[in-house]
Image (cartoon, rainbow, N blue to C red; front, side, top):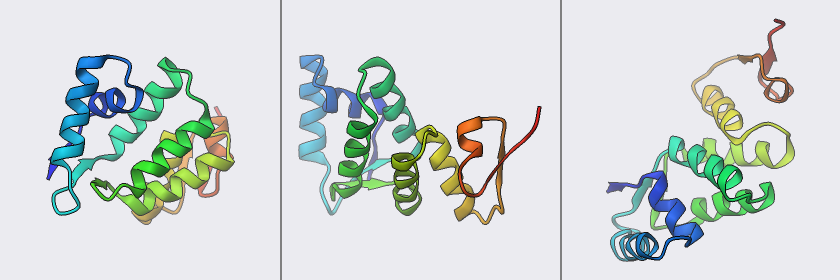
Length: 133
């Protein structure tokens, strides 16, 4: 298995730079198989969301579709796939950032009773507690 960095996925998804896109496409489509999938960690997913929404003005709905497609791609192994699925559903229906949704899901999977934050939107999520400042 080979780990995949954010910039490889972003080049593949956006196709905005021809040479890196071709290199990413060649690698992903020829080297990542069901038997030997590419590994996409949780940090990479957070960075992909951040880059797509911040630099490419991709809508939240489109981001949800991208992450959902990555989760369904058999040639990729997604770190903590079940927590990512849970986070994606929370992100879809809330105003919280994807990273906060994923943090909450990972903390829940790690048996945390709650996650504390100063973030207003994250503090509204189930399993979170907003601290007064």
